[in-house]
Length: 265
Image 1: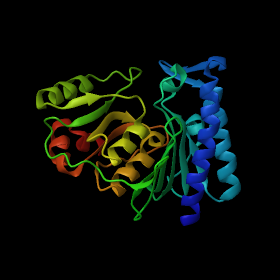
Image 2: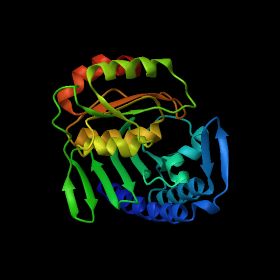
Image 3: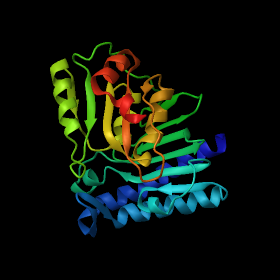
Image 4: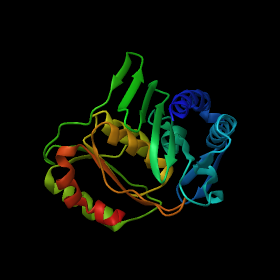
């Protein structure tokens, strides 16, 4: 497993460097529409192709699930690499520096390795099951711990939502969180927001419809940083399910307020 962990960190940086080069030339990119409000560019495809080639060469017996080729994936989530080549495509295309390359290695539907690389900040978040969560940055390597928040009042929570999937339950939960005094944000990149929960920068994260490539590596980071994660179990590659992660001190109240644990089952 350690060889996969080391390689995942290395290839995340390589993929991030390619993505960053595209980001610096984003005005030249041809943008396509996959669905309502769902964009893709040559950058997404080229970064995913790089990840696929490199991982296949290093671990030819492992399976590969990428966002841009997800409909072709069949079978269980086992001995599989799950990647989002550019998580936060809208931010990426609009020049907002909040996007990342997300990589996870999954066995028996559980992430054993989670890596989230933020190229614009040169921050590499990484975890291996049982080894803690870490962030490598310009100032060195630091072990991550979730925040110490104990109440929802004043908690700093990312509430993800995409307009391509209107959900009136989102509005109901948002009202309940406002009533509880939660400070809400949505930065538009699930994996990076989960990494920031692991780092204690955010107290929690929730999104009601999220794909496996957006979430599973980031959830591993939160777990290894001592945080709480609700069950996250999509039954097929393209299914979207609820995702919740937070500091352990607010887990019970956060679950009760949002109902995300019930929705994830």
